[in-house]
Structures are given as C-alpha cells and as structure tokens.
Image 1 (cartoon, rainbow, N blue to C red):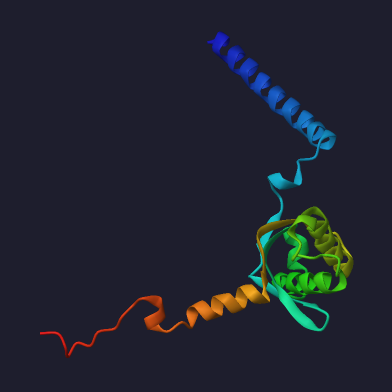
Image 2: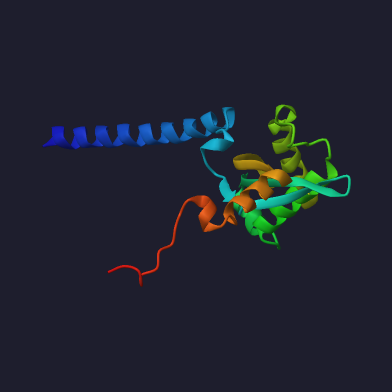
Length: 173
C-alpha cells in the first residue's frame, strides 16, 4: 500500500513540475518570435465592388473596378465611428484621383505592390493609427469606354440580327 502512495505522489510531483516548466518556457518562445500576421489575430474585411471612373483630359477614359480585402485588428476596427467599407471605398477613390501616375490603361506599367502599400498607408494616415496591416486584391479590372460601348451594343441588337426568331403560337397546329 505504501508503494502505491509513494508512486502516486511521485507521478503528481512529476506532472506538476512538467506543467510548471512548460508554462515558464512558453512565454519565452512567444517573446522570441511573434507569430506572422497572416496566421491569426486579424479580421479580414471584404469590400463591395468599388467602381471608380478614371477621368483624363476632362473625359471619362474608363472605369477601375476592384474588390479588395483588408486585414486589421478586430479591436481597432470596432473603435471606428464609420463603417470600415465606406472608409476603404473613400480612400480608394482618393488614392486613385490623387495619384494620376496609376494608369490602368497601360497594364504593363501597373505596380500592384505600390498600389497596395499606397492604399494601406493612406488609410492608416487618415485614421492616425496602424489600422490596416495588409491589402489583398480579390478582383481588379479596367474597362475602357469602348469596352462598355461594345457590350451595350451587343445587348441592344434586335432578335433578327442575333439569329433568334420568335414564332407566334397562332401559326402552330
């Protein structure tokens, strides 16, 4: 019977020592290397489709269309007095109009990393805090005026030009 009591005390002491040791060392490991931002702790806020008309030489050249995802800390997002999606859409408009060098019509000259960093930095400057950690692009398009006109012409073609015919039911037996 004494052997069982001594064994139980020895197992309890070893367990308490192992738990104490693991808690002591777990704090040191977190201080040494913080977890990367993409692995948790951030909310992902997806914007609605943002459509910005691009005006050059007093004429609409085309439309910039984007759906973006912003990563931010939930506590800071909750402290905003405006909805995050409205703030993000406003900053995309402001960024595109204040940076005419961002030209979507020349797709080879588009700097996506510069665009992401510019949007992130402009939002953080406006808020006065590091609210946005990363800007992710879910969808990005640029439609010229000609693209839009061609699409609207195709939609308005009469039925005779598209090859479809409409038969009346009175002629059928």
